[in-house]
Image (cartoon, rainbow, N blue to C red):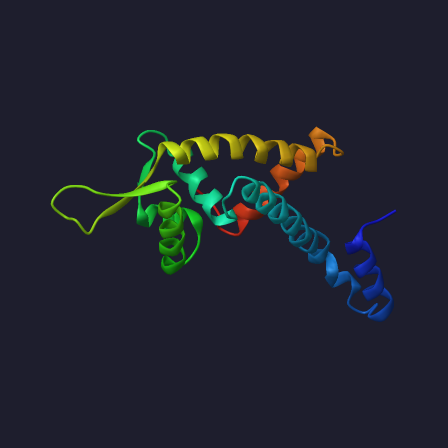
Length: 166
């Protein structure tokens, strides 16, 4: 048995046997790409079930895990969400309209804006996160837990080697 990546590599082995040894990165990276699509679909489905978009789910989780007072400067949200400043502004605008977050200006410098999770935002992310974790568990239900942990450790090492550190 095999997966789609095995089939792709097999096709290349027939078509270009001269480069088949150079396909070793494909064994991992193509699977990561395919897995990312599956995971993205799961997150979008869970978010939609709660009336939010994937990016909004991302912002809610960032604010929730930041701890009390569940408020961060807009720049910190920008950095954590890895999107453009225009995208984060639009996202916050939509979320504010839905009552999920609010903009807070503190002190003399009114240009400094922090984004705070509202009570409604807390409730939405509380329920959505539980559903999200259940969906993730369901995605991996057929995989041995030890293998999941080993794979996670291997991917951590790959990401660290690429400079993706805290």
